[in-house]
Length: 312
Image 1 (tube, rainbow, N blue to C red):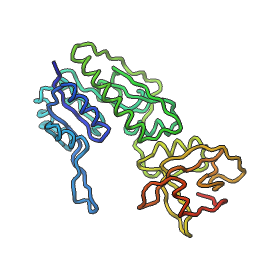
Image 2: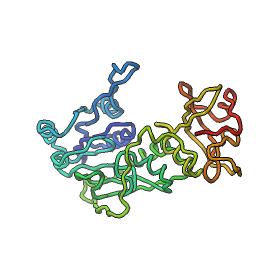
Image 3: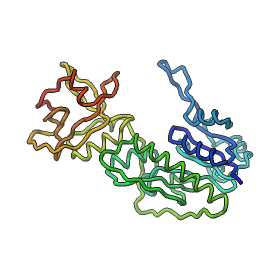
Image 4: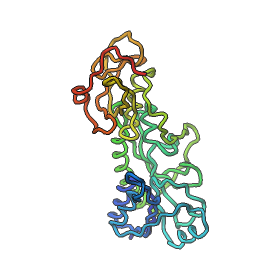
C-alpha cells in the first residue's frame, strides 16, 4: 500500500524528504514549489527551485503557482484527490481550502521544537538565541503560522560551534526520516496528534541584512552564536582596516578564547582576536569580498591587522 501525496517545498532543505517519500513507495502525484527566480549577472536567467529540479529528475509533475488563493488554483489542487499533502519549507501560507482538500489533511516538517521558533528562520534563530537544543516536529497544518497539532519529534543538540549550515543539513536528514515515519503511521491510522501549548511560543523572524553586522559590545558567547547562526548565509560581517582602507569581511566561523585584556570592546588583541564585552573571540574562518573563504592563518599571510586597532 502507499499514499497519494502532493509534495510542497522549495529549497534544498526539502529535497531529502521528497527523495525519502519517493523511495518509501508513496505515489507523489504532484510537486508544488515557488516559481523560478531571476538569476545570472543581469537577472535575465530563471533559476528553478531545488525541489523543481529534484521532482523533474524523478518524473513528478511540477506546479509553480504565484498564489493558491484563486478559486481555479484551489479547484486544480482539489482535483488531485490526494490522501495527504506534505509541506516542508514551501514558502507560502496555505488557505483553508487547500488545507481541507487532501483526505487526511496537510502535514509539515518544521525545524524547531514547537511552539518555540514558529516562522521563517527557526534554524538561525535557535543558534543566535543560545539554545542548547532544537529539532524537527511533524505537525498537521492549520491556518495559523506553525500552530497545528504535533505528531512526531526528533531532538538535536546545539553547541557554540554549531553553524546554521551544519544544523540545516542535519535537520533536513531528520525531517526526511520523521516524515516517512509519519506517513507510514497515517497510512495505517495510528498517527496521533497533540495540541501545541501556548506557553513558550516565539517567532523566528526572517533574517534581515541590517542585523548581520557584528556587535563587539556583546558577550563572547553572543558574538560567536551570532556568527555561527548566520554562517554560511548571509554571513555575519565586520569592517577591517587593511592596506589603508576599510574592507567588509564576512566571518563564517569563530571561537571563544581565554584572553585577559583591559582594552575597549572591539580592540584587536591578538591574531584575528577581538575583545568583546566579557572576553575575546578569535575569527577562525573569514571571507573578503570577491574571495574564497579562508582560515585565519591564510588570511594573516596577506592581510596585516595591527594590534590595538579598534573595530567599530
